[in-house]
Amino acid sequence: MNPGSEILHYCKYQERCHMEVRNKLYELGFTTPEVERQIAGLIETGVLNEERFARAFAGGKFRMKQWGREKIKQQLKLRKISDYCIKKAMTEIPPDDYENTLNKLASKKVAEIKGDRSMLSKKSKLYRYLMQKGYERDIVMDVIKIYLET
Image 1 (spheres, helix red, strand yellow):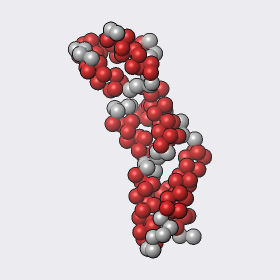
Image 2 (spheres, one colour):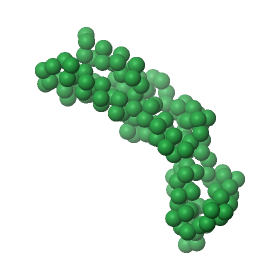
Image 3 (cartoon, helix red, strand yellow):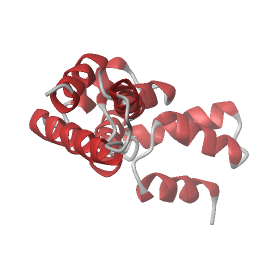
Image 4 (cartoon, one colour):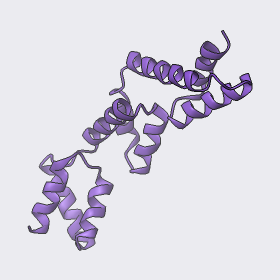
């Protein structure tokens, strides 16, 4: 398999960001000018599209791993995705689904920690869990009030 078709297969297999493709091309032994030429060609042919990647990434991580918006944004920034594409990607997360997922995660975690004696311990475990999942602090605090203070 020649390197050109190998990178084409790599890109068609799943959505990729520019950084992943650039790293793969260097791995395959391309020089910097060749890497830039290859990436430009992939963009021109529509095989490589950062907005499409960001949308697929955000939707997938939300649906499959129940990640919150903050964690998804952070991961997209690590992949050097533009703010414009990140904003577009966030539209892939329907607000109702987001709220339902957050409530489902919270109720599952509350059931897991019901044996804890201390309310402070329960609150901190739920807080840490939801923050680690990437949900926004203000809505996590609201969820804690709903599930642990009523």
